[in-house]
Image (tube, rainbow, N blue to C red):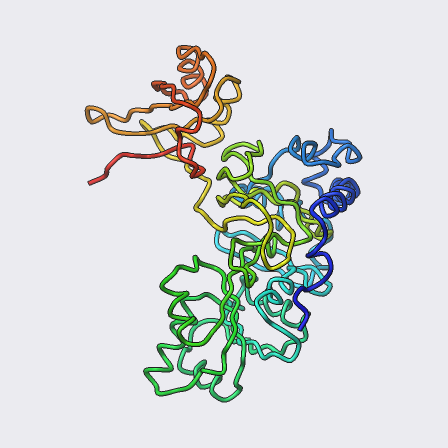
Length: 409
């Protein structure tokens, strides 16, 4: 059995980096020329100059959290699409609402690679329980399965009794869906005296794959692997037999940036996942997911040489309200930018004498004018805050730039 989906997975890191960034200038030119949003956003950018990570990091970030408003301004896709809606294969709506696209072609969401790493092969029968109703998850995994040559049972969610009966009759050997729903199907089968033991492999997503679910599913004889993606970007990273972090997809560029900014952080530091895809129909460039993760050192023991990340580690949007005013991560990034001596900072919000209080802890190895930093806090947030200096490395590596410590009773 072939171990890897294709030769892209075993390229040297240098070759992969070179090929991705050699292709990037033409892709940015395509986005500027065909997607109205990027034509405006990148109006002053010369695509030929964006051929390295350092150059890419100079471009503005587009945030998933902004999509609702962008799409209201320019229906239906905010001008981020490079082809007209009538030329797309499917149009979806996710909660928000956010309108999502599926273009034409094989494996639009790049799901097949992740499914292959999970052991899916031609001739498998896949019981797909991701939703088929308006949202794209069902189609994401169905198109990936079809690209591999698998048959698909389009089960969706709900109707657990009927699903148990269907599995018993059609004997699928593979499952796609959330881990909690797979656990629910086994429990329903136990309750009914049914049999769904034909399922021996699974790809799971949509929620954290925690140890209790892993152990339950493993005990039922199922090898399950997680994948990480979104309705906007498709698959971002996936688990392999090594089970050491999630391996990035071969056809995207991922940066980990300081929350609230577009500034890349050092490898190993927790930050926000920002993705650039090479999707010509929906060419997202520096798209901030709002998710936190970190790069793992080294490459996977499974032989795949791409960058690995730790997986989902929380949300980057730590916006909170202080004395009736919203304070955002991008404001903390602006304060740091004004004072180059600050290596890293975290704003702690607490109650002092029944009133909201803010304390900005600043990592620095240099002299820092604390009054100037206080003035910056007031200028940027319109609120007063205190400042303390801490040693470099003192702040937790958890991606937080705002921590709300207030206790609500």
